[in-house]
Length: 197
Image 1 (cartoon, rainbow, N blue to C red):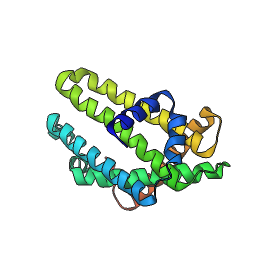
Image 2 (cartoon, helix red, strand yellow; image 1 turned 90 degrees about the vertical axis):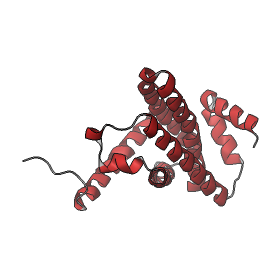
Image 3 (cartoon, helix red, strand yellow; image 1 turned 120 degrees about the vertical axis):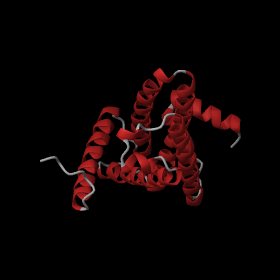
Image 4 (cartoon, rainbow, N blue to C red; image 1 turned 180 degrees about the vertical axis):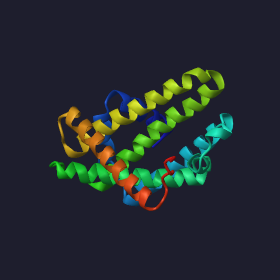
């Protein structure tokens, strides 16, 4: 895939994400290539996050072990690798529970592509930090909206669903359920901060 093809695919992702999902799935990439694409994407994202941290460091009074961890490129990349893998597994598994036919292999490829698209937004955010810092937060909000929109559209195409609203509700419900489970695990391992008496 050339740079021109990549740019065209990025533009088409914004115009017709369903078609892009079909194109990506139709490539028939081997599983090793999909994992390699994920590794490359999260590595670039980790470096961009580190660069953003150098431009606009977290104030000392707001620093936590978590913010310290994500300021390290390798730690950030590792967390994103795990998060995207889990997201792909949930995209495939939850969809199949509701009658979808999507496979994990294709869900992984689609979630990796979402990460690639968000890398462009991440790079634009860094540019905004240098040129128009006041607009950086607005771009961050746009990235969140873009993430949910692409996830809904790709999930629909992956499983053959027709209702964007139902997929969105399922996405939110899954996110809440996952957050609940993770909070229980974090509490059991003593990772949550103690409440003041």
